[in-house]
Image (cartoon, rainbow, N blue to C red; front, side):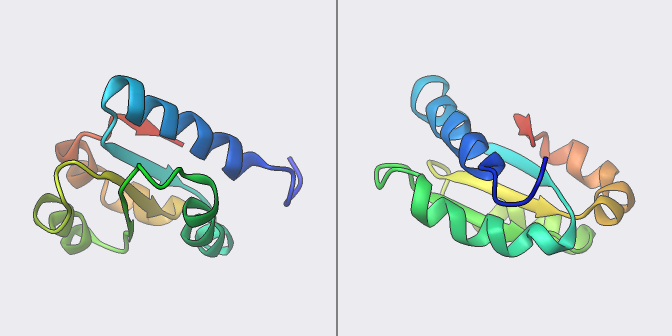
Length: 102
């Protein structure tokens, strides 16, 4: 799909619903580096205020380790990785056990 067609908004709407209805907490987003800024901006715009969230840019196994310790347990944690990083740290990501992958 073309840029600017609402893919991120639809994903955030769905993730927000899963957070509110099913207790979703851990989300892995795998996207091109060029989309990182979109994922940084769009949750502020599209997630309801009652959904606390934390967003992490993953760039190595050390950044995955931060996911275990630095976010509030009740927040929606959105970890964003590019394709190459996802491949390199997949073992660590499996340990984190994301509940949804976008």
